[in-house]
Length: 220
Image 1 (tube, one colour):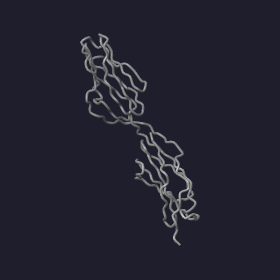
Image 2: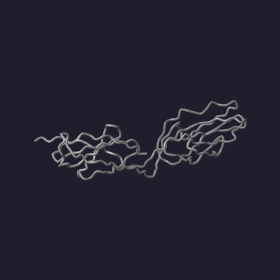
Image 3: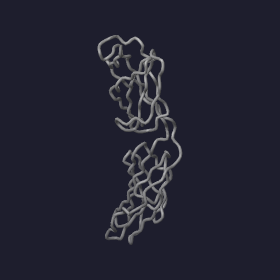
């Protein structure tokens, strides 16, 4: 008698959070296009010259900045702020540097502002995207199917295949779990970003179920 495929009665569930490793290293950026404001009445300008980019990616926890400022009234100070709540004062005026600007994970908008003797201010901005170098893990759990699509009992369940990938419905990776009594599995070494998971089960004759529902996890 022909065996019917078995039916999923329960869904796959993500049950644990991820872990993040320590960060390190550095990245590249986008060539600068010049985002400094126009000169003031006193001719005040300020420009970030290093990094030489409007936007840059890095995995470092801090970054050094440097640049120039000029004014007919004389530059009196250069300061910086971050949209993450950090702030400080640059060393120097016409030629200035900032050492070790702290970076949070994600996009950091850094604004450097120069002030001159006439009381005018001008700013230049750089966006520094700090990426994680860590890898995370996701724990999947599920309940075993107990019957076939015709309603008869499933007695020869043989295992499961975990399908996962970086895009919804596109699973580039598979893991065979060939022990039917195992109903939880930890997938490790997942790089930061979106991950999607689904499950199939198979019996001793090689019949395979349809995919379970899809589970989603963001590794940061």
